[in-house]
Image 1 (tube, rainbow, N blue to C red):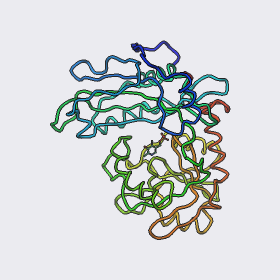
Image 2: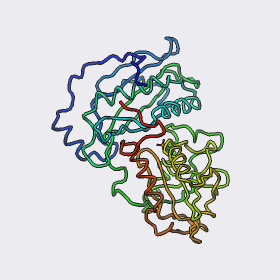
Image 3: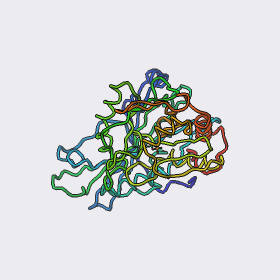
Image 4: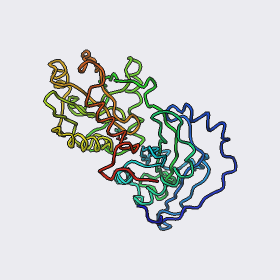
Amino acid sequence: MADAPAFTFAHMAHPAPTAASAREAAIADPGFGKVFSDHMVSIDYDLAKDGWHSPRVGPREPICLDPAASVLHYSQEIFEGMKAYKQADGSLALFRPQANAARLNASATRMAMPHLPEDLFVEAVRQLVQIDRDWFPAVDGGSLYLRPFMFATEAFLGVRPATQYKFLVIASPAGNYFKSGAPAVSIWISEYSRAAPGGTGAAKTGGNYAASLVPTADAFARGHDQVLFLDAVEHKWVEELGGMNLFFVFDDGSMVTPPLSGTILPGITRDSLLQLAREEGLTVREEPYSIDQWRSDAASGRLVEVMACGTAAVVTAVGHVAGPEGSFTIGSGGPGQLTMKLRAQLVGIQRGAIPDTHGWVVKI
Ligand SMILES: *Cc1c(COP(=O)(O)O)cnc(C)c1O
């Protein structure tokens, strides 16, 4: 990885970068996804011109699209979510960027889009972090959130995979994901479905999020923090939250997470927690878990903790669950010991405070 980049990115002059004073104000209280850094990386794809070409780093600016661009009509769009972290020694690092690159290509396969070479993906992200290194938030637990994404640009209204695409990476300084820094979240069991068997649930594509907006608004309106989706067929099996995977921790030291059956998103945080928990000596099973079992395990006390995980919020406790059939609490309703421990381990590895024995941390 430390070798000279195999790709040459052109650097375009930036006529009007943000003034230092405005940048400092922005990174002092960034929130999540509201403030953006000065630059973006772009790479274009044209099937008729040997695929990916013209990688460049330039000013972050509006994109010019033909009104017939197929992304606007048939939604060929995929994205990734990842973070760059400032290490204890002041250096910058990415967490498992190759896994994001591989997942982007898995999403691309499902959405009939071209693969981007994994090394080109990682280099694009690295270039952006390097040029916008002054955009790291000046707050505790802050990071630079990175949003690589790809969409169809070809002007064509026939229904078939487009032949032209754009891959971009933008960056946003990020503080804490939950406004309140919530110690435990409350979730609403949605009657809507997120993903059906054979559908696009395992792809990180904008359409899955579009479909989750009404259910999420419904959960918010009822006073909850997040929405829980059950399977689309029996409306019985727990799948995931709008953008986070779930883990169930039992009093015998075992842990369960729903399997990657094609209707849930294969989270990189999920995969990392599976490994960390196994190393902790927990028995971890990837198996279906029903909402009825959840309710009765919470009532009996056999279920001691529930964790929700994803890049943006890392690891968060689920304290309360509510649905049309009533509500219940997990444990004391606050974050449990294992949640705190695994969270601290993961955050420690990401920030270089704990040695990385897995080769997950990639220095910039
Ligand atoms: C991105 C995402 C996740 C979490 O994935 P991470 O790689 O851990 O950030 C979970 N569920 C959905 C629906 C997602 O889009």
